[in-house]
Length: 164
Image 1 (cartoon, rainbow, N blue to C red):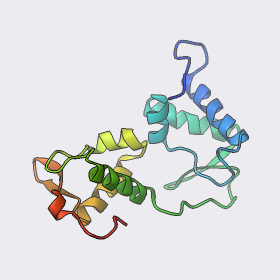
Image 2 (image 1 turned 135 degrees about the vertical axis):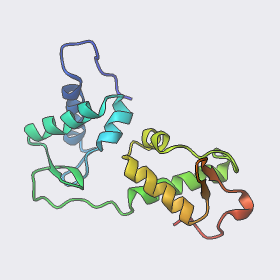
Image 3 (image 1 turned 90 degrees about the vertical axis):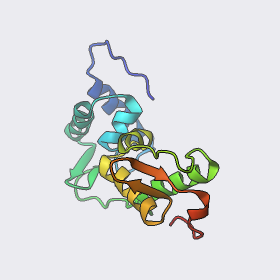
Image 4 (image 1 turned 180 degrees about the vertical axis):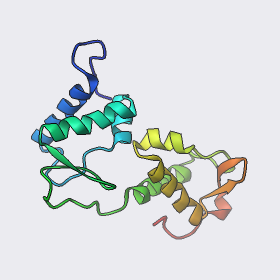
C-alpha cells in the first residue's frame, strides 16, 4: 500500500492520481493498458469507492486516460487500441485459488473466502470475484451449500485436469 498524506491539504484522489500518473510516465502502465479498477485502487490505497471513482475522473481531466463504459479505464486518448489481457482476470484468480487449495492455504471442508474477502485480496469488483468462484464450483474445487456458504471440496473430489 502506498503512503498517502491523509491529514494534508491535498485530496486523496489527487494523491492517488499522481501515483498513477507516475506509473504511466515511468512505463509501468502503457498506452492501451487498463488502469487499476476502482476495487483495485480501494485495496491498494485503502480508499473509499467514491475516492477511487474521483481518481479516474482526475486522470481523465488530465487527459491521461479514457473510460469505456462497461470495460474500464485505459491509458491514452479515446480510440487508441486497448491491450487485451491474454486471460480473463476471473480465470487467473481461479487458478491462483486452486494453487492455494493445493498448498493447503484453503483447507478442505472449511469455509471458502467470501466475495468481499476475495474483492479485497485481489482488488477486483464483486462480479469478478463471483465469476472466479463460479469457475471453481463448475470444476468442483468448491461446493456451495444453501444458507451455509461455500466450502473447499475434499482432495478426493478435486478434478484431475488443470484448473483452466
